[in-house]
Length: 201
Image 1 (cartoon, rainbow, N blue to C red):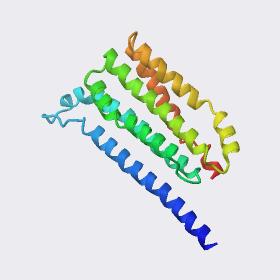
Image 2 (image 1 turned 180 degrees about the vertical axis):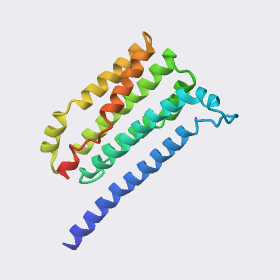
Image 3 (image 1 turned 120 degrees about the horizontal axis):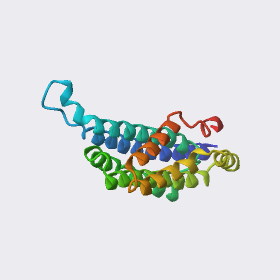
């Protein structure tokens, strides 16, 4: 029993360490993103108008990062221990999330541009794909693997998210506004936290 208790504590520590590292990185990503909102020189409402595209880009980026933070926290709870696959999957997700500040800034300063819109959507697509990879790695080390897999496979959110982001990348070169609508649609769809994992914990 003492040995088992020590092993459980070590497993918990590993999960907590990974989560703490991820929380720190996500906090830095949000901080860098908000720094793209430059303080205007004037004191009138007119000086704020040029900042609106950047502000809206920041809002959706903040909501996206926040959604990943919420679901990431729950996802790590289903793993009995942190495997190399989970660690590398987590780093892969954080890498693509770390590019959001750059793409947010470029999109905000060049709103309506095909390439900035396509790159922003592409990064969001790769974030979604990376989260799916991490989710698969976590499920491999879950005690309720079969039940959770069945529950997650019933959802339509994941496939629709990938489809919307992939479509937004291509449609950015046809009409960037359509891409913007698809990105907003995904943000609205995920505004309500995903409770599929929470009810099994």
